[in-house]
Length: 144
View: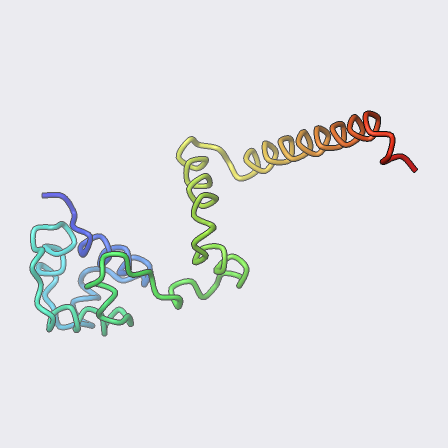
C-alpha cells in the first residue's frame, strides 16, 4: 500500500526531529509497530487520541496531521537564516523552489547551477543594454 499523506508527514517530521520509530514510541506512548503502520500507509484511520500523542511528542499542533496542506512548523527550520526561511514559506517562491528541486534531480551541483545562472543573467543584461542602445539610436529625442 502506498504511503498516505499522514504517513508521509509523520515520517518526515520524525526524521527532521532525528528520532527513530523506537524513540518516537517511547516519547509518545504509541507502539513502534503502530507508528510504522501509519508511516507505510497500512493504517490510515488514526484516532485523535493517537494523533494528539504523536503531535505532542513531535512538538507540533495536532492539526498538522489532520489538515492535508498544513505547513511544517517553523521550529523545524531553526538553523536557517531568516531570508532563507522567508523564501521557503513565501507562496510566490514556489516556482523558484521547484526549479531548484529540478536542478537537484537532474544532478546539477550548486556550483554548476550558479554558473549557469550567472551566464544567463549576464546574457540578459547584455541583451537589455543592446536594446536600450538601439532604441536610443532610433529615437533621437532620447539623446542628450
